[in-house]
Image 1 (spheres, rainbow, N blue to C red):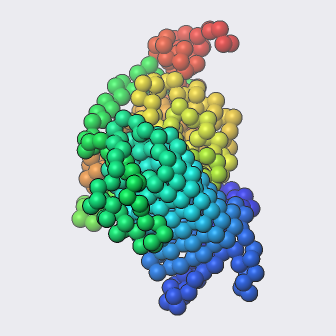
Image 2: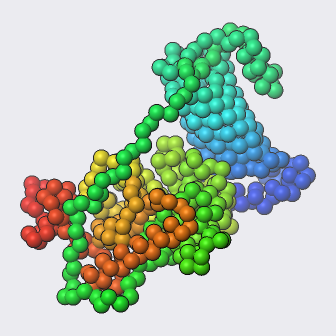
Length: 518
């Protein structure tokens, strides 16, 4: 991670590293590790530490004392007992462990949990069990809005009152409520438990003090879920209205060398082309049976992957990759995909960085990927944490033309990003050409993420060669020897609409169109 973290982050990472060093011995001895007590048992409650105890292995047992922050014991398969309150994302992505919080917890507790049990003794905020896949949540006290929001499976048992919109968007699982419950919205049915369901629910609860009475109600999906979302159509003529214009007296000779390499992070990671093609698995890139030139091309180019990263790849961090987060130490770094995570604020993002950093012996490089329409937030958060790159995701705004993104991103980057630390990039919703990459680089978007049409080793290597050829040709035509020398002076607008949106000089007119904002 570029830059220094806050004292709270450093303390949190330090606690995680100490625990990691003691876990193996503690599991062998069936011992409990304690956070918030000295060696002689004196209480020293924690105050705001976050991202603690991620991915505890089976057999691990931890107890904590104090007021903790977000992302506590995420992805765990062990046991975690906490005496005190906890922040958002408590027990997120739990695998097969058992978590207990004797106090109150923040929003999104049990987000995307895959199994295990979470017990909450003193109520929680909104979105308990959101996107839950499986497992059991037991909660006592007053709960916030949208209990079980978009849950897909599992069981939530509540002894207390719930706020508005319980079960909103749920497509599977069951919510059992022994208390006051408002009428759920469309797509959710509220009814009494059948005798068979009551017996099955109570059989799944080991603690007799949590047994469900016969007069409890349950919420279930009104009908089986059927996917109906239509795929977004590919962006048509994405770069129309944008053209390249030389600023040098002559073009380079055809054989002149051109440097298309971009350095990412302060380590740094060298990208032979300014792209991170996104593929599902890094195994496809190892190209063990491929021709030598294919294997060599793929071995040199870092990719963005969802699992099995190579040492030069960036691992995407999102809900769809939760089970692969523990492979981050094998990667060069991580791209935190805000569009595939629950709503984040600065505190929860900081806690997630703590969680991820704690798994690695050496600080990984981080990049942030977020909605193009919220590029100011993406840039500011990336800058605050000294991240290597900030990518705006065009796929979230398919109706927003690319030329409109250039000034939006440029103004934000100029105001918030130190180009020596954090590069400005873009996630494309089409497969670019070499010329597209040159145009984007001239517009200040020097790094691109995109998803190739094919992920076979030969097809990927061929795509990389085509991109290099295309970039080399256009850079030679501009008389440039490196992508680093590209700038806004090399861009022209070829239509009036694009000129007005982008503020670029109009080809032929050679200056921006006059408008009322100037």
